[in-house]
Structure formats: structure tokens, C-alpha cells
Image (tube, rainbow, N blue to C red; front, top):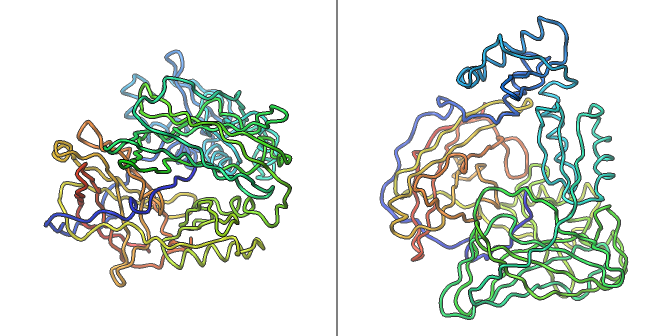
Length: 512
């Protein structure tokens, strides 16, 4: 998952619904087929029916299947279940059950998926994948020096020895060129002093000196930062050697003659090995990539700051470590801030229920609330009327004993592209018809407010607008049984500022 983004509240809350068409009610959601599971989930489902199945891969024209047993009956069961699920695609590629080559494996596909999920708790992971050719979960860390902590965490999870392989990578370098040539000024904003135990906020502020708006199209990993100890020359926060970024574009707009924070990062004053850096002077350097292909780079001047002695108990670092966005299944998002010269953590929640959930977690951890400031931002709601043209598919399945609902939203934005559509936000609300409250949905509380460019190809990619909801309320507690409504739409913003909602028919959803 990505670092939090600092967005303008005016951009979050602006826009009105336009149009006259009210979508008719649709059929119950459970009557529709579920969207596809990913390959790891499919393999785990196969292993639940055939426990010896460990996954498959194709190499040198051969279909190889990992199996954890030498029993012919269990091996044949693995092949049978594989072809029951993936047979159509495999046969299209020229394979049949008779052509399978068995490879002895140590772990079945369900164990691999469980290990993959558990590995997400590793601090500093860059990518986590199941390597079917190795019958292992491979974790790539962002920076060298993180391996020891990662292995210690995995040992605490009780996973089978050897099921997870740690793969560190060398650190990278800040890009130097080509420079972003559109007129602008850039500045890094960091505190002059920061005490040990606190978290350092790093903001990139861009000034537009021209009379026209400046639109910065960028990827999810556009903002790159490195921090160096001035006295020793040690890179205490190196640039990652490789970054796994979501395949999406984001937009940052700087109005004419204005200054805007276009991106931000945080640093917990710890080196990659986990130790707190000593007091002293440090310098932060940064680059921001503008454009998806052949990017140009904004390089703000370096900024120095000083780390002073402090304690973990009174700072914000422990709070930030506990309050990771969306932790405990609670809907919230955090940002560092300052109040009367003291660093504080702003916690944005959709309602008071979520706030109570966060407060309870902090009390359980015996962490002080005096450094926390709550702000309620009601969820972005799909309006009752708008344009038609969107399609919603809702399905359900059980994952690790928990019910999940899968959503796919698609819409044809070709007519609106001709009118200047440039921002598209998918929004899916699960609404309690008795109270009218939004009790769930997708994307998550904060990410639903992040704008994305509209597809230049006209029809949006289905995979770009696929999500999951787990029948839980904003505080992470299960939703009461009953009938609910699913309201879905695509919020399209034109360059003129006009907002158009492309709505899908309302669907029924039953929570047993």
C-alpha cells in the first residue's frame, strides 16, 4: 500500500451533482456472478479441495504442478481440481491433464497465500509475491539493512520455516534530469528542529507564477526522498533501488499565482535497520516526477534540519506506528501537523463511530490522546440522480471464513472526454435504507477522494475499478444482518469545473 497523500480540502469537498436521470432499482446483488479472484486466491481455492496442490507454472513448453505428496491419488486430485478451475485457459494453450509434469513441493497453495498475507505486516516491504516456480513467497524490501527485522517478524508469525524468502535490493539514486521546464518554483518544507520520538513531515510545495493553472500529472511513486547525516555522510534514508507502484495516474493542480503542497512523505527518524538516528544536522533531498512516460523532474533545493534528543513515550512516532491508515479494520487516515509549535497527528474519520474505535485502540496501547486531533470528513456520497451509463457488478464469496463483497464499476466516458473530462472518481456506497447512512463501500474512506485521470481510450479498464468490502462498519465491527442498497457512480470532473455523475442502477445486497 502507498504513503498518505496531503490533499486540499477544497478539492476534496468541491463539486455538485448534475443531471436529471434517476437510476431504476436493479436486481438483488447476490443474483450476479462474482468478479474474478486473482491467481493466488484461485490457487488457494484449488488447494482447499486438493490439499497436495502447490501451484503451477509453465516453462519450456511444459505445464509443471507443484505437489506436496507422492500419493498418486492426491496428485491426480490436484490436477483434477486445477483443470476444473483453470482448464479452459490451459486447454487453449495446448495443455491437458495427461501432459502435467509433477514437481515435489514443500508447501501447498493455501499455505503460500496465508504466508503472503502474513508477510504484509513486515515493516518496509516493497513487494510480496508468490513465486510459483520456487514454491515460495518472495518479499522484496525497500532498502538494504531491513532484513534482520523482517526475519524476526516472520519468526513471530509461526509460519512454516522457509516458506518466505527475503530479497533485499541495493538502494537507488535521485534522478537528475531532465528538468521540468514549465515555469514554477519548488520548496521542501520540513521543521527546523525535530525531537527523537517524533515523525518528520516532508512536504513538496510548488508555486505557479503564471496566470494559468498548472496541472501536474504524476504516478503514485513520483515523490522520491533521501536523507543524509551531514557530519558522517551516512544515508540514513536512502532512495529505494526499485519501487513497485500502482498503475495509475494522479493529478495535482496549482492555481495561477498560488502555492500548493503537491505531495508529502514522513520519516520516523529511524535508519533502515530500525535504530533511532542520533542527534545532529541532516539534509533532505528530493525529486518529483511529472508525467507518466518520459517524465521531467522537479528538483527543489536541499533542506537541512536538526534532530535533537527526545523520548519515544512523548513523541508522535509511536502514534504513527500504531495509527497506520486503515489498521484494525477502522476507517481513518492520518497526517502529521503542528499546533502551537507542537507536533500532532491529525486523524480524519468518516464518523464518530470510527473516532471511538481509534480512541479505544490508543487506550488499549496506553498511548496519550493529547497529541491526536480528530477531524470528521463525511464519506463521499453517490447522488440520487445524475447521468446514466455506468454498470455495477456485485458478487460475494467467503475468504478465510469472512464474507466479502466484490465490486466492479465500468462506464463509457467517451462523450465526456470530448467535453474535457479529466478527473474520474469511482464511488460505491453501501447504504442502510432505514437510516440513509453510508455503512460501507469502496474505495476506502480516504482513497475514495483521490482523483484519477479519465482514460484516454474512452472505456475505463474494469481492473482499475475493482474493489472489495468486508461487511464491516467504520469502526471495524461487523454489520448487522439485513437488507442494504448499493449505490455506485463515477464522478467525472470537466476542465471547466463542471461535475457529472455517471450512475449505475441501485442494487440490493443482503447481509445474512
